[in-house]
Amino acid sequence: MKVRAFFSPMHKSSEPELILGVRNLAGLEACSRYADAVYFSTDRLSLRAKAKEIFLETLEEFVSEVRAKRLKAYLAVNSAVNETRLGEAEDVVTAAVKAGVDAVIAWDPAVILRARKAGIRVHISTQANVTNHETAEFYRSLGAERIVFSRELSLEEIRQIRQQTEVEIEAFVHGAMCMAVSGRCHLSAYVLGKSGNCGECTQPCRWEWELHGENGLVTESRGKYLLSAKDLCMIGHVPELIGAGINAFKVEGRLRDPGYLEVVSRCYREAIDAFKAGSYTPEKVEAWRTELASVYNRGFSTGFYFGVPGLEGFSTEKGMNASEKKRRAAGIVENYYPKQQAAAIKLLEEGLVIGDEILIEGSTTYLKQQVRSLMKEGMSLQSTEKGDEVGLAVDGVVRKNDRIFII
Image (cartoon, rainbow, N blue to C red; front, side):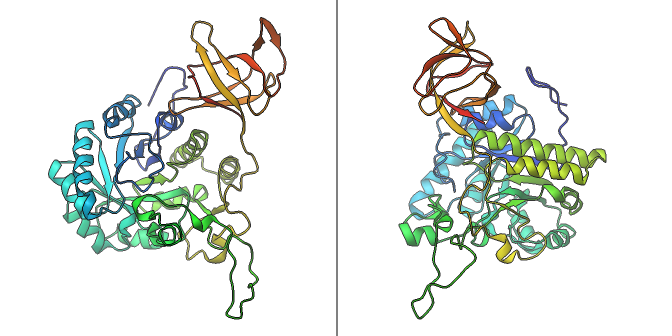
């Protein structure tokens, strides 16, 4: 049982472990009531090079915040390690030891060997493309305690492997899918010189593409986004996942916003706990799917869990966000007044109305609330317009330059 001030207590099952990807303190706050663990990266050797909000110098501080929320901390060190980056591998492992992370997520032997020598637990990244029990046992012989399985495995294949190894099994249950095997894609490197395997993917698979025949004519297809895979969503198959012996459920999304992390972590927490309580029903699944569809997604698929997905696994009509409910930018925080529990805000994009549901978000802020008081020059307002500078009553600490969204 976890109880924290300002939040209602919620039971969190010890297994399967629910793991969310975060990039900063705001993301950590958003999922902390529901997750058992978080995974994250620093500015070195990560497949999410854009998520540069945690640095080697601040890693210890970030892990302390994770610990304060009673979560496990997993550090992703999962990019390719070129000869010139071996020194970085040493630096990252040294920083991980100092910070006291629970495990590093890696696949390159240069990182695995350094982590084991330093006494850090190792989880093998999905980048290793582990698809059989012998490979799982090989990594176990190197000291790995957990394998993040290839996303191309079916549920039946996972069951078979589970019966032949005692290594812990972690599997993705929700989030973006790569059109390349286990994310080992070279398209971004060839098109723009940005290597996805070194964390710099520009996602050309999400662009509009045309398929040309040998005669030069454009071939008809089901849409323009020929390479854009739908997001994985297994909320309707939690019993099967648990029954297959999966020890940890992983949610992709280190580059997604905190609102996404809050909704996804809550839905999967509720689903896991409902299954264990015997109250997992089709009606609840439908409600969870509706909530998941309300935040960023590219359409949903069950990936390879029940066979090769084929064309239905691609979102050919929409390359990016398929959610019909999108948050709208309203403005920024210019100052915060703790004694008054209010913020001075500037509405750069859109006005606010009393009763609006808003989200105030920054690298260390995640606050969802209703607009209950708006003030300007001592006068109470019912509504405001774009360009207004007003006072807003806030339900928690906010910071200068935090963004305000209507949700």
